[in-house]
Every structure is written in C-alpha cells, then in structure tokens.
Length: 578
Image (cartoon, rainbow, N blue to C red; front, side, top):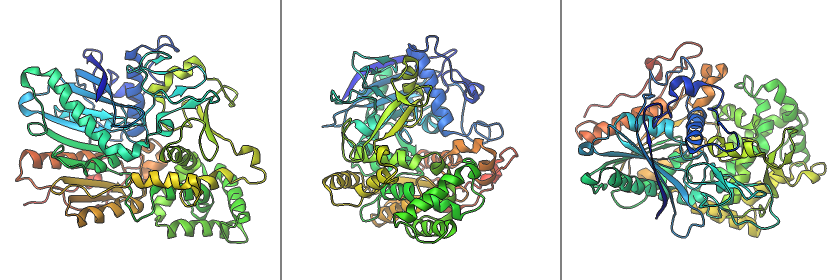
C-alpha cells in the first residue's frame, strides 16, 4: 500500500510546523530562496512548500490573532515520514506524510489525520491539523488526496520525486499517460484518470493507516499502534472537510471523532456543487452588478466593464432577461438566488469571479469527473506554462522547479495558465467554453453522461452511527456555499442517526487568508478559531466522557476591522453542561 518511504529529522534551525521560519518568516512576502533556482534541494523545496501552505490558508497578519488569540505557531522539533499510497485500482498514487513531534508520548498516543484543502500539495493542511495536533503532542498524518502540486511538464518529461525535487527519471509522484501529441502541463487532479474526489474518504483512511505504521517505526518498543490503543481524530477544511465526511462513512472504528470545516460535500438527489460552479461561471459576473458595496478586491470599478459585457452576451444568448444592464444583472442574480445562493454568499463570490476561479475549477473538475487523460478535455481546455510576455510557451527550469512548493493544484497560477481551445470561435460564440462545461453537468451526450457518473461517484453517504462529528461553515461562504453543501448534508446524517453538531458562523466566508485585505477584515471573521475550538471540545470529551460534546450553534461574531482581534469578538460556543 505504501511505497518510497522517506524519513527525515527536523530540529534546531528547522522544525515540523514552520520549517524554522517562525511567524516572521511565514509573514515574509518573498518566498524562501533556492540556492540554485532550477535545482532546489529537498530541504529548500520543503521549506518553501510550508511557507506557501501557511500563507494560502491562514490569516497571519499582525492583529489577526493567529498565534496569540487562537492557533499555535510554536516550533515543533521531530521527524517526518512520507510515502506514496495507492487506492486499489487507482492509476496514480497520492502522497501521505506523517509528522511526529519529539514530545509525542507513547503512553498518551494520539494521531490527527487530515487532507489538503482545495487541490493543494501535501502540506496544504499544516495550518489546520498541524497547528493543533503538534501543539497537543500528537502525530499528524496528511494526504494530498490524489490532487496536489506534482505538476508534470509534458514537453521536457519532467515531474517531481518523493522529496519534492524536479526530475525526469526515477519514481515520480505523478507520471501521466502521455500521448505523443500532448504538450504543455499536466497535473494530478485533472489528469490522473482516477476521479480522486470519489475516493477522498479512502485517501484520508490511508493517511491514518500510514500514520499508525510510521508510529510503529518511530517507537518499535511501543508497537503496535492501532485505532484501539491510539486516540484518532479526523480534521480538515474545504475539500479536506469533504474528505473528513467521506471518511466518516467508512465502517470500522478507525476514527474517534471528526471535525469538518466548510466542507465541499454533495448528496445524492440534490444538485452537486459542479452545477453551482458552472452556473456561476456564466452568470455571476453579470449578477454582481445588481449588488452595491462588494468586497475589494476585485476592484469593482475595474471589473464593471467586463461584467457589463457579460450581461450583454448573456442577453444575446437568451440566458438573462432585460433591456438594460441593470435588468439583466437582476435576472442573473435571481437565477442564482433561485438555485439557493444567499446574498452574503453572492457578495463573497466576487473574489472567485474577479479572479476567474469558477472557470478554472469547472475545467479541472470536469476533466477529473470524466476521468479524462491529457489532451482529452471534452471542452477543449488545456494547460501551459507562460512566458514573460504573458503568452503560453515552454516552462523555464526555474519556474518548473517552484511548482511543487508553490502551486495551488489548480491552474492558473505559479506561471501556468488555462488555455481555452475555444478562443478561435470567441467572436461568434464568446460563451462556447463555459457553455460546454455547463452542458457536461446537464446534457445527454456521451461526455455529459461520463462526467455525471463521476459526480455521482463523489456523492456523500451517511456517516456511521456513534461517531462524534462537528461541521463548521460560514454563512457567507461564496466558494462552497453553505446552502448547497452542509445544509444538505446535515439532514442526511441526522436521518441516519449521526451524532453531529453544526456550527453556522455569521460573517464567515471561505478564505481566512483574504482577511489580509482591510476591506475583508471589516466584513468577515476567520474560520480557523472555530475549527480549533471544536477540536478542543471534542478532544476534551474523548479524554473525559463527562465533558460534553459541542452542540448546534448559530454564531454571531464581530469582525475586527482595523483593531487587533479579541477572543470575545469570536463568540465561540461554550461547552454545554451535562
């Protein structure tokens, strides 16, 4: 099940949690340097990956509260074990990694299992599970859940080794099927052929199993480590939260409790998130013109001309009604409202719209759901490196070397762009690519049926009875809307008798890292404090069953605006007396 085992030690000027960077180093806007830009060492690649993973998820700004009001940034010396794991019948492996702090106590053995948010690399959940688990003296097991930043350059035949360094030979973390006609960039989420989302629960379980085996190696005198003698907790946010809920379905007492934040989770019988994403890709640029006072960025004045043009194109295509931009925007907004999107989520969706995330997500997920290989995208999308002139072209060696550390797992970003093969027809049909993506979720073609089969495979089922679960979700989440995910999952879970608590957080949107922008911290609060509080309360119950589990709560916090965050502003639910 596990191949390419590696063991490394991280002490002194290095550590497990921040790679020796500390808070100041993580706050630095310049990435940790590679001595040789095209040939980083494993240590350099790891340090930059940890820096990037922290900055992509957490709000580390002065006054934001991380490290003093909530969360932990204390150096954690210890060991890392890593490997490739493989789901039975999968074409590609997923990465697993375990951090074991030196203060781990085999007499109070504990293990936290987590999965990366989004499509991030193996350290993608370090600010969530790593921060909490290492502070509690627990081992922390990670998986990239079959996605991740192991990009592959099809032209130079270069990928990444187990240690995160680039290579064209050896046992690579991702080696796609490579048609001779294919060029550009391949990445695991889109091109593995495995529909990784359908197996996110099993990926998390394998991370847990790898964690137990790593503990056996680290403490052979105390082996075996099993779920029966080791406290186990599953925790993750976004897609990682979805992986947690999918793992909760698996029979067997592998996990003692689960905490899922803003989970990407769909249930059978309700429209999947892909439906919302493709609808938003088409309509949201126009719909946002019906709202005033949008969060900045994107700068509304700069975005308005393109959004106005989208209204005009939608009108020509018969997708909105109205004789002027205001009426067309209202028509688009109403369609999103009818689909279940609340105004707060629509407003927060301005970020994803302004930075073209809807199209990027839809193109990747369509490829994954349909299990398409490189060069097979049914809507003619592909990926390429981009040169200094902004045009697709060969990847420079220096750029290629940075991908494992810095890429988010879904282009565009890190010098890789999404190439629209429909661009030549854009004059006659400017919505050709987006309409194709939309049709894959609704049509009757062979490709549409293939994509919908993959979507169905990824639907969640009810969790096993008796497993304590906490679900946390911001009511203003504009990327993974609460009304289309958690609100639909909770009735399914409760109907099956699940032991589940639901924390709904007002003024909560999807990305804590966006609170670095002044306008966002005037409107929103971070979600990670609620993750840590729920983990604390669940852990206290596991340690002492007389301590109550969390209960349902509608949380009404106060954004900090320009003042330092105070814990009282978060209104974290207290444990109910039993």
